[in-house]
Structures are given as C-alpha cells and as structure tokens.
Image (cartoon, rainbow, N blue to C red; front, side, top):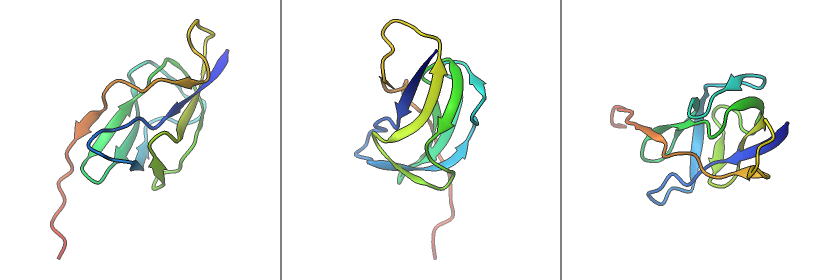
Length: 106
C-alpha cells in the first residue's frame, strides 16, 4: 500500500480558495475512483469534487467550514501500489458544478 495526498485542484475562473461545505467520506471509508468526495463552495458556486483514486481514505486535511487554498492538501488516500503513483496525485477530473441559489442580502 502507498499513501498519496490529493490537493485542492485549480477550480478555474481565477479562484484561489474554497470552503469545505460537507465531506462525503470519512477516514477509513473505501472509495472508488470518481465517487463523490467533498462538496466545496467558492465565491461563484458550490462544486462536488470526485475522488481521483480508488482506495481508503487515510485522513482529511480540513474540517467542514474551513477555507482551503488551491494546492493545499485536501485528503490522503491509502492506495494499492501502482506504477506511476508517487507522492501527490494529479488534479481530479473536472468538478461537477452545482448552482446554489441564495436570497439577496438586505
């Protein structure tokens, strides 16, 4: 087994950080590649980040409500040893965008 850390990918549109809305996994959970991992909120929308690997969640690096910078550790996985997996994992496939409608601030 090898440990790999997945960092917050560049979500585009000049965004440099995101807030963790909800973890959809917990340490010890087994996940498949592309399974929903975490829901994040940016200044522009809410996005769901898919898991970049199949494996076991070793630890999450931010609590719900925390702000995470692009490139900062997001989650560490235990994965089966595989050629080409060293250290950090490349960015996940493009996040799924969700639009959250909120009433205007008064």
